[in-house]
Length: 272
Image (cartoon, rainbow, N blue to C red; front, side, top):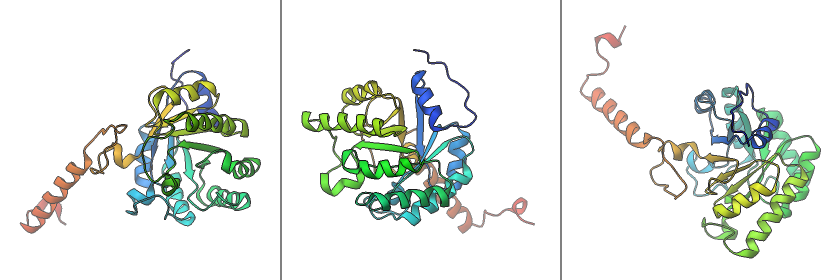
């Protein structure tokens, strides 16, 4: 299988499927605002996820549940304005699609029309298949999400690794194949055993993007605040910090405070 990297001027859902077919790994990060999206996009990321993790890292909530559809549209529209090359995928928030397929379609349409996003992401398998079908039938691309599904945290009661037992693993495989059959263009697998994730990636034709799912999948996703070290309280095994922005930013801000207090800032060259 070739691993030659093709130069994509604009990433589409088809681009991701082509990447999988040619053995090119897919890079994906979250972003929630214009400035961060512009930086992430210019660095060459393939997919920007406007995640409901904004509930945690932007609003300070303990879970992803409180964020609303209006808030997701606000974040997504900001990201879309900053992204030129990347595919922008937007999470449908908790309560906007689970119980009623018609509500799911209305939610997805609002995101696409009001934010300009390119696709939506939903958590779950068989239990939400009617919602997925409804959205796909309207021509809206859908990314699936299985394994640890944070919107179901109170059902699971923990953020621990999922599908370690055979029964749950078999259901995960069935759900992955179902999402492919329904027409999802890709799938996120979160916090499941690496061997199981690789097995699923090899058994379906759509790209599988992992977070805490090992290296045998078709791509990786991380929350931008975590990988840049802006959040120093979250340290799961799957996270690699590429910077320590918390330390760097704290030091810079402390220096600014000191310079203002001592009247060192602004100096003669920094005024009119």
